Length: 361
Ligand code: IPM
Ligand code: MG
Image (cartoon, rainbow, N blue to C red; front, side, top):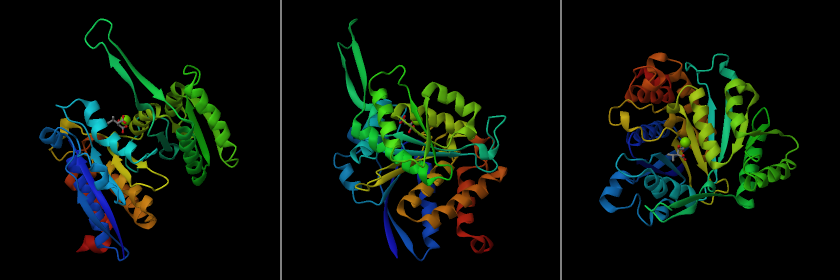
């Protein structure tokens, strides 16, 4: 029997609701399995921790996570703490500290869910966006001087390294190769950003030469937004810089019906450190504490977590349970236009995972 050590970091807002739901799903899976089990460790880091200790996570926080097999993360964000503090103090600290350089964001239109696109069939949108996750516009390079003076100045410098660009492009080409269409779109902005993005394009050509079996093209990021709306079926795997992919992935999630269902994995492909899985939606204070959050984004993140652990069969079982539940409109939460609660959706997905025997019992 394999035992996996899973860290849960609910964080803030609805993270505190969806992560316990994710844990319950994993516990349900393990209860029905003879081949694996989970040991959970929960970390109360985030806004409340900051109010008590002045930091989002302890100084040795990364050491506490280091030996975990995976991390299930909720969200970081608090109405009373500046966003850059909550982000840099927790989520980015983990992403950068563990060099999770590939942020993987699959998007599909799940059964029962409507896309706002009029001419898009459910099969026309099946994308994976790979987001560079350690540098670029989020490198943290920059500064601010003469604060409060008329001559105040500030910079956020997007920094790209050959190593950083090459490894994420290679990851994206490999991922594209593993999917049936073997197709990759490299997003760029090298017309306007004439240094780092030009290097990005050059490295794309170099890496592409290693993958003659992958069809690839290049698209400017602004044109990419239009293509996502107008020609969704022309896209399969996508790779983009940290900020470009941040924006494109919100668009992707909205086109697939809701931000509430979108998952992500912050992956260290070399497996030197644990990878981290989280719903994309953020802390959503407007609905927190009311049991209205959609847990599907977390459940799909659990699918990615299981795939990363090599538990492909369990991952497929959870994915099909999710699809069974989204197909039933009575089980749609508010973000999908329904009035189901987090509890109802969680019960339904756990029941579907447990199988017909459990349902009858
Ligand atoms: C995401 C989120 C974060 C980001 C926020 C919370 C800073 O939008 O994961 O896409 O921009 O990286
Ligand atoms: Mg985002």
